[in-house]
Amino acid sequence: MTAPTLVNLFDFEKAAESRLPKATFDYYAGGALDEVTLRENRAAFERIPLYFRVLTDVSRRSLETTVLGERVSMPVLVAPTAFHGMAQVEGELATAGATGKAGTIMIVSTLSNTSVEDIAKAATGPLWFQLYIYRDRGATRDLVARVEAAGCRALVLTVDAPILGPRERDVRNRFALPEGLTVKNLLGVGQGAVAGSPEGSGLSSYVSSYIDPAISWRDVEWLRSITKLPLLIKGIVRADDARRAVDAGARGVIVSNHGGRQLDGAPATVDALPHVAGAVAGRAEVFVDGGIRRGTDVVKAIARGARAVMIGRPVLWGLAVDAERGVARVLQILHDEIDNALGLCGCTSIADVGPDLLRPDSK
Image 1 (tube, helix red, strand yellow):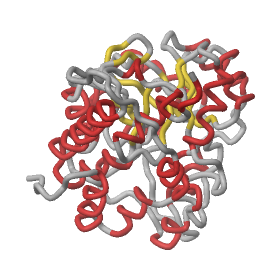
Image 2 (tube, helix red, strand yellow):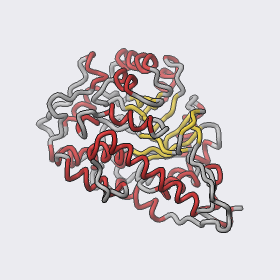
Image 3 (cartoon, helix red, strand yellow):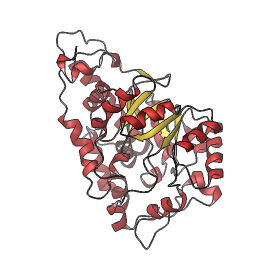
């Protein structure tokens, strides 16, 4: 059972570290090279003050909002993260169960240890699906068709990983999936094994072998031609790329630097967020991930232009600590912190959160 001393998301990280094998924890927790961007994602949130309002009636508050027309209990979605089976034997099934019961959306990773069909069967709420485009376009097309057939409601194309960022923790640990775990969604086409590599990281070898480094805006057009699902593009930090994504038909743009796991030295996502939101100018919904650990972080992100945020690592920490109950507890903690932050900011709903909380002379 989850110990009562685990009162925040940082506590869950410490508890998960004590439970997981070092190579597994390092894979989940680590970033690229010197991990500057990994640390900056968190530090940037801590630098942002909130200019709270006073003498507003906050006796009744609601965290509900909508994303792509879907009502959710709070502006927090579960980000796509790979290999949940390394945290708990139930893997993505436990994550999906907890996320649905919390009233929000799980984004299933291409690199899940459970097939999208099995996750969909176990899900208690809506799913989106995160996609990498493989060199094998036939396998990619087939996977998109399976995602639609399984009932996923949106497709999230990750565009910031045409090649893998150098993750030195994984190189030192010679990362590979433990025995019995595979990339289930690609197992049928012979691309399910993430095996050890004499050069270091097995994931690096996997990505260089199978993920297409030649993806371009033409592939966004191709993807839209083969699916009826709304498309979101994940991995945007520039205004010009955001405008081009929307021009290409994206319904959503996700400001992300892959959790600090790709280009070390990339901007913190919350710092890139206002530039992207300004460029999108309401033509699509804007989301952000990276470094979100507190309810106040969520309020800050919304004040900077996000429709909602996505959390990845904290979900894995909850999963490692107490399976579905651990994930549920992580999501509940964040829900309660957002509720508290809203009230203390003088807001009664997500719609009340605006840029004046960051700069009181903006009205």
